[in-house]
Amino acid sequence: MIKKLFSPVFLVFSLLLLAYVLYKSEIIFLGTNREHYFKYYILCFILIILSICTFYINKKTKEYFSIIILTLIFSSYLFEYYLSNSLMNKEELQILKIKKKMYNDKTGKIWDERSQYQVYRNLLKTKPNAVPYFYPTQLNINAKKVHSLSGVSNSPTVFCNENGYYSITNSDRYGFNNPDNEWNKEKIKFFLIGDSFTHGACVNRPEDIASNLRLLSNDSVLNLGYGGNGPLIEYATLKEYLLPNVEMVFWIYLEGNDLYNLNNELKNKILIKYLNDLSFTQNLKFKQSEIDKVVKTIVKKEILNDTFQLNKDNQLRYKIIKFIRLNNLKKFIKKRTVKNKVNKFEDKIFKEFKDILKLSKEFTVKNNSKLYFVYLPEYHRYKTNYDDTNYNYIKAMINELEIPFIDIHKEIFTKEQNPLELFPFKLNGHYNEKGYKKIAETIYNFTKN
Image (cartoon, rainbow, N blue to C red; front, top):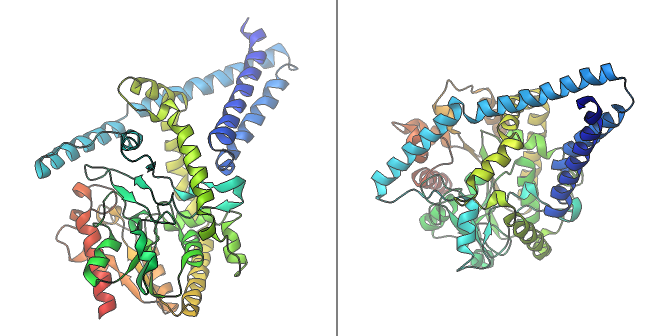
């Protein structure tokens, strides 16, 4: 009976899986994220071909094949069950418990346990133009014809919770974390590009770097940092949004993942054009309404998906969906393959990074602006025996390019009795309010001196 049913069941499963991938890629994400789903399309077509082949193999071979397939499926879900109940997950829960207690003891408030989408849905009641935070790297507008470098414009944006509360930023006309009138200033003193640390992840204004700089200098500051950015996106941001009245440009580099991000960005067909064609531009300033429309459409469809409605009634359902999708297994595999990928392309990445910085300097000089390089250390530097090879290499590279180097590790963290005090509850994450403030002070003092 099993032998007879195996082939048709296998084929039906493969077709259903393909239908689901098509639904997510073309209906939920409107075809804007096909690059992410490409590997799933390949997997589906391989499964369909294999399932068709099973109709023509002999019974004995089919029996062996079915045993192998069922064993793989059973093993995968068994390991998924182990990971979901492993010591690692228990440690994460214990860490969250510690955070909650420390936050309560420090502020007298209760840690906000809602999901990002629950916060967003509640915010909609009073602010109908609110949006959840989206990484621009997730969105290729109109089937890769446009690559967004920012979020939705003029909207309250629900970001993240590492300090006990969800940060909610009000975006400017181009979807960045600024008061919109900063773009109208006669002179821009500070122009920041970087990733989520530059954006001001998990704190509210005026606790981010840019806001602190405004308070310290009483000058205009534009913050064009965004989560998930790497060096190529930051160069693209510079080319798309740099104004002629900018005095100083600050390239804010995070040692934790910027080179890995660059490795991925170099594969992007739109972003690579910024390197290969110095005159290339997407004219994003004139396409913001198009970007806003696509993001809001995707958000509305995602909200209808039960996986984002994390109330008490369907949390069990969400856990089951995560289990079926083998979420923990996929994370486990990704975590152990990312490092190898970076090491494999390390020489190429450094060369590309140097080329990008050289082009960035030339571009800012033509704009009569001054480029500075700000080096941010990651959490693990202060928890492990950290390898300084990349740190030394990048520092030498910046000196060779004659770009002023602001070493946040040296200027701030090495002078702290406990550097972990600058992270939320001394645990892994972005910087806390104190950390962001000290970085702003260091940048301000460096330029003043």
